[in-house]
Structures are given as structure tokens and as C-alpha cells.
Image (cartoon, rainbow, N blue to C red; front, side, top):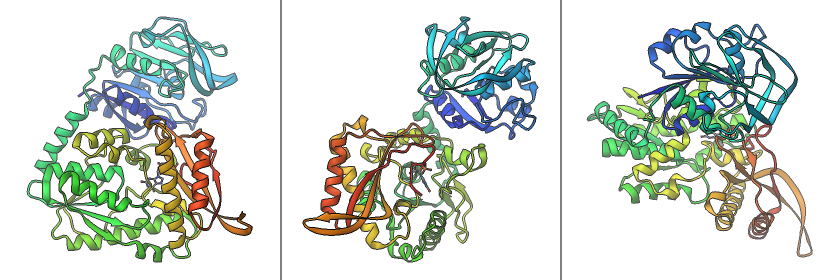
Length: 511
Ligand code: XMP
């Protein structure tokens, strides 16, 4: 199978590049620039390399760099933004701080008909985010595009099949970005589009059958899409030798625990061990207000309960984990800094003896996991569910978590989901939408009475990858209906507000 290496220099779009490539049916891997050498890259047999953007200046001696030998490895290269400037520098050109930076939408004019721009109009809009620019081309390169401010918005060395672009073809704001990536993969690298989910599924099931022959496997089902798809995959591979433990921490959305249990029973006739641990979690979270502490407590408690149940499930040979590719890259593979501790990776049980771990989804992106789930037969409505954080509603209740607050939030969240699903056609639904119980009380009036109650915040975002997002422009009438129902139907809520921040600077979840 052909594959692409995305060499990561700390850009925020590193994973997005890999996803775009995979969407074009070519397998792509992300590796940090300091984790591989030219020799490793040659040995792995990559058919092409993409150098990502990054926040640094290539002229800063401490900035990330790479051996110039990469340019002579005989592998086609595409440099994006910082990657474009790095190529220029490594090949002997010059990069300087431009007179003006270019941030956001920017017109590009093609100046030479290179393969990368095959079939693309002479002018198009691109997304730029840079201050430095290439000011002198290296030997062997020719300029291929310019903007109003920079002469070399793109360059190409036809001999070594190396090209660079100052803009970001991977973001949807760049017109013809997909065509540019497609041209790189197929016209410049000459790759075959042979990354297919059906092949992945068949191959993985066969491998799991061989590896887990006669063995018992334990899986912690969280109710989220990843562990559910993993359960379906493992069930196909090993049948009843899969023991699924579903720890219901009581922090799931309204009725969600039952939905998870039914989905597996009805679709596959599979039984899962459900542990009702709501009280234990509430006790452990008593008095805790600090977000990271909440996350840690939930992560640890989850593992302890899971461990205790697993002990009862008989002899276990393997532990299955629903780790997916962004978890792998974000937990050290890539360069981006940790903003919140997600508890999907790293929290392994210590007291259960098992021979090994299986993580069959660790090369997949979220949209690929959903596609796999669909192919495995999980109901569409189940696979399409919006993402839900491991620590659940705990990170949507600001301040201390109590049973009463949980009840209020579950109802408010259910109303919001119900109204949005009823009012918006499926494609217009936000990628994630939920209610948050803020720690702010406010004064209201009901009948002739003064009230003093909770403030609910509504959050809805549109995003491609959850690394960045913008708040959804929900029609006012829909917001009005949600607000009206929440304040009328839930006792103790006096006010509803809508969160209009994007990420960055905010994150999707409030904690
Ligand atoms: P943030 O809040 O970091 O969220 O902008 C980005 C996406 O990740 C989800 N999220 C989590 N998922 N465990 C998870 O499995 C977690 O601890 C966690 N925290 C946030 C969030 O819902 C959003 O989709």
C-alpha cells in the first residue's frame, strides 16, 4: 500500500493534512520532525513527504529543521507554509520577514503551469498565515505563484519533484486545496489510491482472529463512538470471547446508558456487563471544583472500577483500548502542547494481569472510525452521534458536581438536543451541541415572584476536526424555543445564554 509521511514541524493543521490525504484514499502517517531520520524515511518506503507549517521562523537558529539530505532522498516533497520556507532554506534559497504578513484569505496568481496546479484556474483564493516569506529561490527551483505581497507563493523543482506553497491547501478556506493535494499525490508522487475502509476492516478482523486465537479479550466500553466501534469489530473477530465492561459513571447524557446497552443487545445479540457506579463517582467528586482535578479523579476511578469488574469476568488475556490516531499523535507523537488531559490514553489498569494490549483503531481518524462502525453494522443514528468527552457531564458543570445539578443539566441538554434535531435538517446540525451548567446564579421573575436560579449556557460548534471550531449560527427562533422550554420545564433555571466564542481562544468544552 502506498503511503505519505506528514513531517510535523508544530503546525496546528498537521492532522488535518493527514486526513485530507486519507480522504483521497492514500494512507498517511504523521511523525514529528525530530522523531525520524532520512534513513528511517527511506526504509519505510514512503511515496511522498509533506512538510507541515509551524509557528517558528526558519531564520531562528533554534527553530525546527531537518537534514538537507531529505531533498536528495529521491522522494517527492510538498512543503506547506513553514515547510515551504524550510525547503527554500535547506536548498540554498533565502527567507526573510516580509514587509507585511498575510493572515486569512489571500488571492493567489499562478505564474507557471506546474503539475501541482494542473486543472486549477489562474487565480484563486487561499488561506495564509505567515510573516516570513521566500525572497530568493534556491537553485533548480522556479517560482510558480505569487500574491500581491510576495513573489514566491509557490515554487517547484521539476528535477527532484519538490514543491512548496506558502498557503495552506489542507484548509477548506483555500479554493482548490483538495485538487492541489490530489495533484501532489497522483501527478507528482504517482501514487495509487488504495486506502479503503473495507480492506482495512477485513484485514484487521483476520489479524485479530490470528492474534487472539482462543484468547479472552476485555474492553472498557465508555458509551462513546470509538469504544463502541471497537466492541463491534472485536465481536466480529472473537465473538463471545470478548468481555465488555460498561462503567456507567452517571455522568452520561439523559438515557444514554440504556441506549448503549440496547444498541449492542439488539444489533449484535451481544451481552455487556453494565456497572452502575453513579453514586461512587458523585462521592469521589464531592467538593471538587478544579477542572483538571475532576478529570483526574474520573479517569482514575474509572480504571479502578473497571479493574474490579474485570477481575470478576474470569481469565483475561488481552485488554482492548479504543485509542484512535489523534490520541496517538496528541499524546507525544506530535508537537502540539497539551491543553486538557484527555483520559483515553495512558490510564491503564495496574492490577489486572494480561498478556498484551490490542488497539486496532490506533491508525484511524474519527471519521474513519464512524465509517468502520457503519460497515460493521452499527445503526447510523448510533455511529453518527456527536462526540462526548470521557469525563462526561462533569466537565459541563462548572464548580462542584451534585446530584441535583446533574439532574438539571441532563434535562437542559436533552431539551437542546431534541429541539435542534427537530428544527434543523441533518446536514445543518452542528458538529457538537450541548448545554453547560454555569456556576452563576441570577435573578429572574416568575408570576409575580422573584426567583434566583441557575444560568444554563448553550454551546454549539461547527468544525472539521475539533482542533479549531466556530460557534454555530443557530437561528434565533430555535434558540428561543430551547430557552423557553428550559426555563419553563426545569425548576431552578432562570436564565439561558448562548456561547459565541470560537476555538481558539476558547475550547469546545467549558472545562
Ligand atoms: P476541547 O474542549 O479540548 O474539545 O476543545 C475537543 C473535543 O474533544 C472532546 N473532549 C474529550 N474527549 N475525553 C474525550 O474522549 C476527554 O477528556 C475530552 N475532553 C474534551 C470534546 O467533547 C470535543 O469534541
